[in-house]
Amino acid sequence: LRPGKAIGDVDADAVKRLMIQRTIKEHLDKEKRLAPLKIKVLSLFFIDEVANYRSYDKDGNPVKGKYALMFEEEYRRLARHPDYQVIFREVDVESDAAEVHNGYFSIDKKKVAGKTVEMIKDTSGSTAADDDTYNLIMRDKEKLLSFESPLKFIFSHSALKEGWDNPNVFQICNFSTRETERWRRQTIGRGLRLCVNQNGERLRGF
Image (cartoon, rainbow, N blue to C red; front, side, top):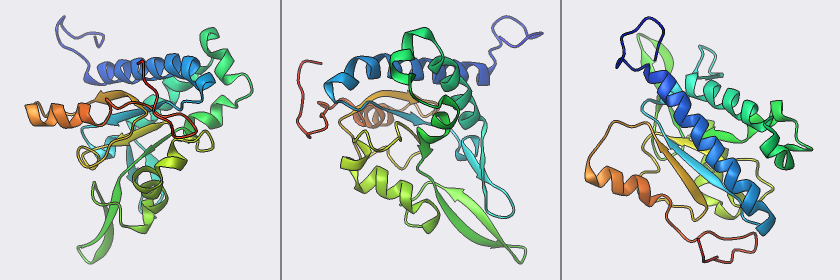
């Protein structure tokens, strides 16, 4: 609850921070157990607004939104917890927090009042601005599932809601307010697969 607010009035950002925190904790708990089995753990966030994760300044440079900042703060905090030292023993937590997450969002340049303005939207990922992220998430699943790639936490708005799934998505955190049965099925459907190890072998028993 936000200080000074009446009981029952929930601070939405505080709730989302707790959701991010819980997702990271569940991820790290599984990573600690499954990494020795050569299984890479992935987590997926569906957010309510792209700008809450990433925006761009007037020069086209990316600016971290509040969800990205929340994520990195909570990730660093949990990474220092004694329960996870076996994972982070030889890892620079400061730089690692910025490297383990990314968003699949495209940029559309439009003319507004005679000026070129970059508008963020969730599309096919065909623009050059997020080409590397698009290729890693959408086309190169083997690389994404390898320990060589630091990316473990994927933020999306709607582009991954259908036609994409990954067998090693173990956590799905949903900030979207869409509550249709179809949306819930599509969201859950991004996971719920038999995971694979570093050899690409499907593993049962989960």
